Length: 580
Image 1 (cartoon, rainbow, N blue to C red):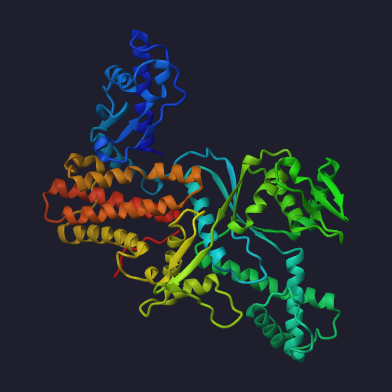
Image 2 (cartoon, helix red, strand yellow):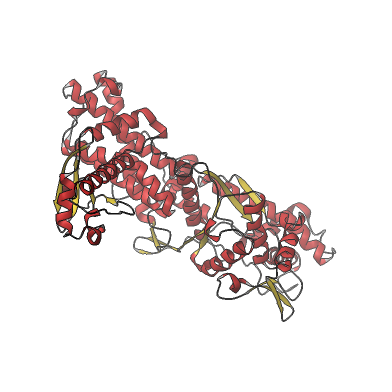
């Protein structure tokens, strides 16, 4: 799988290295050692396709002004059989490289050869990576934080796959401990209140107030009546949890599937208790001297491994904390399932969990750098310029399903089309900003059928290409030709060349997105590609042009269609062939 940009950078580095050797050999420069030659893409196009500051990197060693060093390096360059057309010195000593057009035509050939594989690279070399995300509390529906975390986590996993990693997507089900106990008490209280009246029992102060708890109990009563009224409280809670929890989990699965997310593994927290892994983990920590007892509780010495403070792992009532389960879970990830790298997505309010989790990983003899935690910020919904609340009735929180339904509303769409559009709009908007940035989600903009709406703008670009290709076949009798039969040098207009340069950047965008765990780069990138496509469309005709030009341009837009489709595939957004 070719990365044309990477290939060009390596070629430029080789040319610079050979030039330095030659200059040192001739005595024009003293022997110099360059740790790494940095190659960048200049912001201003007039400064060429690539640039290096190597002359400034070796100023002290060269004992010359950087500009003088740069001139010596340029003079000793051998550009024969390279893509480099000319080299210039600029400013205080930058070396700018201007390429011939062959690399652009090579890009078209690569895209045509690789098709759906274009953009895939081998950065990961098959390393096993787990991306754990959403992992919502199963006591209620998915909310806005889960929606953003889901879009980010899924796209991170997808971009890592495209970058050559062996990726597992995992949902951690918090089906044990305090929240399940609270869930059981909440269900029980609503069950009794619905049968005997609200004054029959008090609702737990810290119980789950959501309307969905009442809905569960109304449904349970309609099927089973009041047969649990005389049952022991602990047994009643257990029965009600066993009824409601699977329903919640199935709803979560369905909502995520509608959102374009399907997990490879659903991992149960309770399984850590049942298998004895939690007990084994706590025993390991204690036997290695990483615990201390204080006020009747057992504390993990997180501060011994770089965290600010120690953390409770067994409460003074003898019950393990959620953190204890999380340590056992990560021990399972690294030591039992042997993942090379683990990536967790958490809301920014969990920032305090990062240091203690890395401390726990270190205590197990695992390099804490193998654990990455991506923190994402909150989302605010806006409609018509004002903060927007979609709550259907008091006590019912805004859920992921509510959002998808609202975005998909359109009298012309059937239910399936509405879900697809809602999913596309939500995923695109949630990935438009870096995970660490607050996100204002403009509901009014997300449903517009105009170029102001970014997801519509990109999808329309793809649909426009499909229409042009169809019309060329139907009205001109011309199909997409074999790339080796076409004179690609006919593509020489500015709009054509700008578009090809954008297409060439795709594998590099995948590489950077995978390294930084920031899929928002790809969202911005595909917007740029759509912009270059629209500029090309207005400046360059296809039908009615001379045959060689028409065929070359058909190849160009077909390559653009491939790139847009491949980016949207990583983002799990549909690429429609027709749009209004």
